[in-house]
Length: 122
Image (cartoon, rainbow, N blue to C red):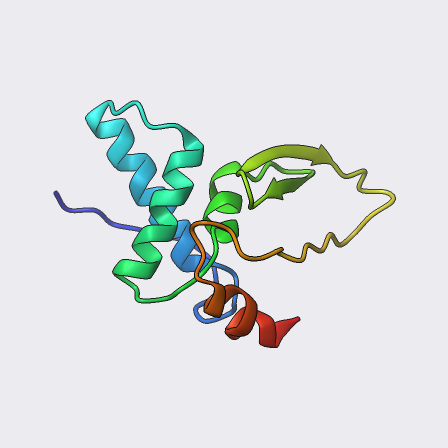
């Protein structure tokens, strides 16, 4: 199978472009194969691909957001049990939403989430 990808996420801008590619590829594969894999499981598979193939240890937030984000909404994500819900953000009242991941969760390595690159950005 040959696949071409196009997008407008700037390279190396810290905007989770690898997560977007992982999720787009997984959604395509799920659709083509008719697989019954839920969105939450796709996000976890994308995170595993990031760790195993891109060799980047990370949490699941980027993949989850790439899959579940909705315009005009913040995404509440509990990384402990992967429960989530979209939360409407009135445009006239808010411009920026921030989240700080709690650690560790079962699919994170403690060293990466708490003491690695993520910790240096907090």
